[in-house]
Image (cartoon, rainbow, N blue to C red; front, side, top):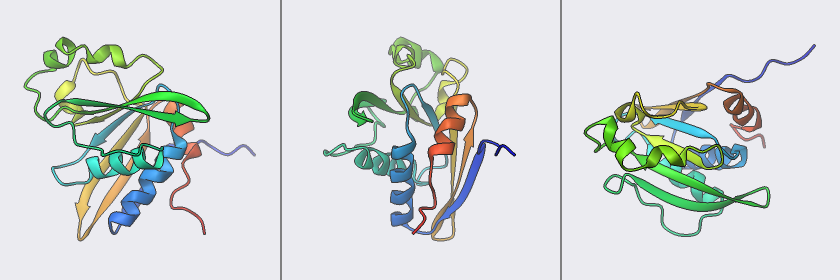
Length: 166
C-alpha cells in the first residue's frame, strides 16, 4: 500500500531551542523555487524561525528582520548548488502595489526560495505559497502548523523530519 504524502504537520515548540530545531529541519527540506508564507502575530516567532533556518542552511552572518527594507537576500547552498533565499517582511507595506512597484514579483521565478512574513499585506498580487506556516503564542512556547499547498510543498513536508528522531 502506498503511503499518502504528508500534507500538514502540527507541533508545539516549548522554547527557542525547539524553534531552532524546526528551522534546521526546514533548512534540510528546502528546494529551489519554494515559496513559504509565515503567518502569526507580532512576537509569534516568524523571524526567529527564519533566522534558525538560514543559519542551519549555512549562512554565517547576522540575519536581520527586513521590517524596514522589506526584503533581505541570502545566498545558501542546497545539495552543492548555490541558491538565493529571499526573506520578506511585508508588515510595513501600505498596499499590494508597493510589492509590485518594488519589483519583488520577479524574485518568485521558480529558482529562488522566498520566505514571506505578513503575506496578507501582499494579497492578491503575491504569488501563492507552496507551504504555509502558522505560528501562535501558546503559554511559554509556540504552536506551529505547516501546510503543504502544492506538489513542491508536499515534497518539502515529505523531506521534513520534525520532531527529530534520536
